Length: 97
Image 1: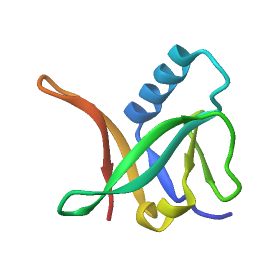
Image 2 (image 1 turned 90 degrees about the horizontal axis):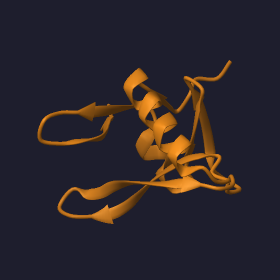
Image 3 (image 1 turned 90 degrees about the vertical axis):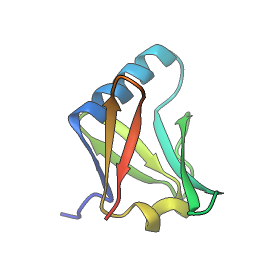
Image 4 (image 1 turned 120 degrees about the vertical axis):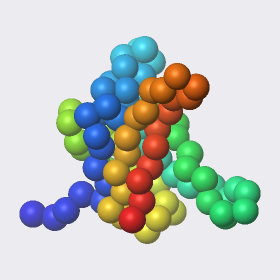
C-alpha cells in the first residue's frame, strides 16, 4: 500500500464537499497546484477539475477527490490540507512539513 501525497482534515473534506455540491456540473474534484508569487516564491492555486490531466496525482480522502497538478507534487508531499473558518477570515490552510 502506498502512502497518499497529501491528506485532508475533516473540515477541509466537508468544505470541498460543500463547494462541489454548489458547483452542480461536471467537476470531478478540486485541483491543487502552485504558481510563482511574492517573496516566498510559491502560492497554492485551487480550481474545479472537470477531468484528470495525464500526470495529475489523485488523492481520495474522506469521500472527496483532490487532483494534484504534476508541477506541484514535490511541494505538496506530506502536506495536510485544512479549512479554517474564523471571525476575520476563512479559507483552506496547507500545513507543509
